[in-house]
Image 1: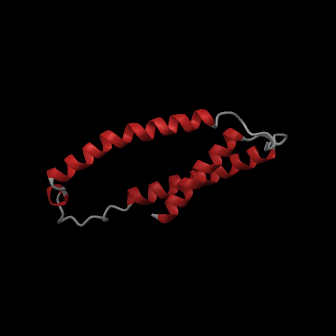
Image 2 (image 1 turned 180 degrees about the vertical axis):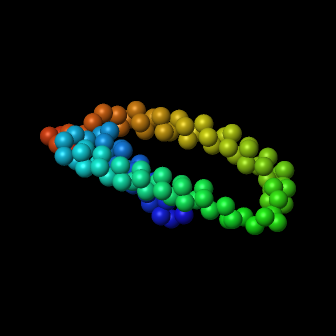
Image 3 (image 1 turned 30 degrees about the vertical axis):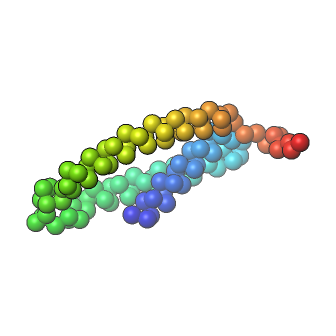
Length: 108
């Protein structure tokens, strides 16, 4: 699982750099995104072919959580999911645009 997570985060970071940069760094990020995508797809294929992760003796009803647990998670999700979505939209709005090499941080 850890290897797939590493490839996934590498893909996310590389595609972010493709969106936010220009020139050589953008081309390098594009190449890394292709490698990371190949790693993610290979990991998904490996997981989908591995059919015996759960023993056949365990049924869906044996693995099912109590209804009270599901209600607790549903209520928590109803409150937290809108907060997370609003924060993600706000952060994308704040950090929109490309980063260029000629831009500097100007402290006052």
